[in-house]
Amino acid sequence: MSAHVLLADDEALILSSLRGVLLQEGFEVTVASSGEQAWQHFVKARPDVVLLDLILGDITGIEVLRRIRQLSPETKVILISAHATLEQAVEAMKLGGHDFIRKPFELEEIVTTVRNAARISELEGRLDYLARRARQHSDSSGLLFASSIMASKLREIELFARSPVQTVLIQGESGTGKQLVAQLLHERSSRSHGPLVELNCSTLPETLVESELFGHERGAFSDARERKLGLCEIADGGTLFLDEVGDLSASAQAKLLTFLEQRTFRRVGATAVRKVDVRVVAATHRDLRAMAADKTFRGDLLFRLNAMTVELPPLRERPDDILLLSEHFLRAASHEFRRSWQGVSKEAQALLVRYAWPGNVRELKAMISRAALLYDDVLLRPEHLPSDLTARAVPPHQPVVSEPADAPIATLAEVELAHIRRVLSLCGGNRTLAAQKLGVTRQTLSRKLEESGPT
Ligand SMILES: Nc1ncnc2c1ncn2[C@@H]1O[C@H](COP(=O)(O)OP(=O)(O)OP(=O)(O)O)[C@@H](O)[C@H]1O
Ligand SMILES: [Mg+2]
View 1 (cartoon, rainbow, N blue to C red):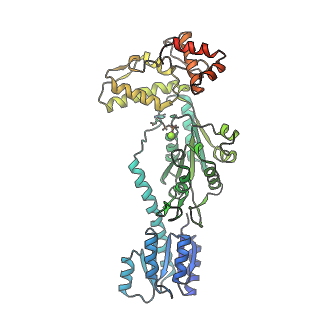
View 2: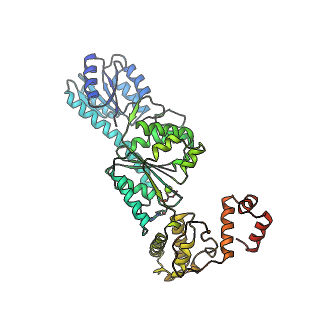
View 3: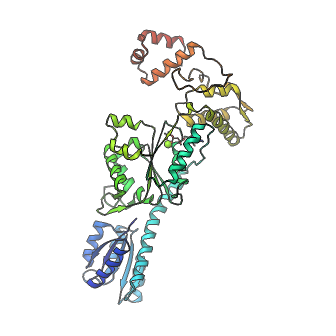
């Protein structure tokens, strides 16, 4: 990422030679030949580093430094002077100057000092973010599986991770492990030494998405009291994980598209265009194709995102994983709650693989942990599980899971009731609509529900 440097000196020759070497080093450079002009440029462009001559004709470098420190304490200001006395140098450092260079100087000395200052400015921005993140505490258990479908998904994930692809999309129902996959995509990539930065697009107020992603300058809007680095900048050299990308507003989708196409962006309230090297991993539980069809998600953005897609299958299609994960969660919870659980009984296994798991692995984990805490036994049996688990079992036209031979057989009435409940919930509880879909009258539907007793 290229840092932006403001150069202020009243000697034209020095300005142009410094500007030349800094441009060559890949910095973005703005020049000013007086103190007042330097200040104006600073307010507008908010450079990361300022090189300031102490003597500037109108207002002194010290005065400019004082103003900059007030407005933007995180900016690195390097002072230069030929005639400076030791006292002036000390004063400049006391005021928060980053470094002090004497004229005559070697160009190389200036370049090194600016490079270090830019690096420190960037690192401070990242540290800020990481410190905030560390406080949030992230759960980083590994991805466990026994099914062959997940084994092939893992191969795909590792292939994507090691490839130079810039964008990966993870799709899957809620609780299928999208977060874990995003972590893996980062950890198994050559970017693993860079940061993994996460933004949940659904929990953020629409108005904040842009400034979270791209950062903002102080004063860009009424709450912007400090300059803030955007997550794109913080993720430079690493991975940016955009969770629930299907929840982005239309305007945020447009901004994200521009960023994905050009890998450049502007902080809110800034004019300078910045470039970063990040891999964007996006995840959603929504059907983006359907959303694109009814125009709630931009088709061109979907096209950008889904070149490489990991589709995580729902848990009900992975009975082997249900068995492995239930054993795993039971042991983990047993340890945590100091219980004596050893394993899951055949009868409980049969129930678990027949259930539809709308909340997928998250729901399984919660159900097992709850049982492990509420009871204390060696084998997890059906009575430790919610009593209506059978009624909630897979409706008939769901993808068929391979059932253990000794699984209890559901009666027709149970299957019918489960189907009715499922359709009813798909219709948001609207009995008239559900009855229509099921091809019965509303009265028949109500009678069947009443006969089945309380839900
Ligand atoms: N294969 C797995 N092995 C171990 N734990 C898993 C696996 N899949 C999911 N989990 C666990 O299940 C929970 C939900 O997973 P995760 O948060 O990754 O789901 P998600 O797809 O991001 O869900 P959502 O769409 O609701 O955000 C987490 O606690 C996660 O650790
Ligand atoms: Mg998630």
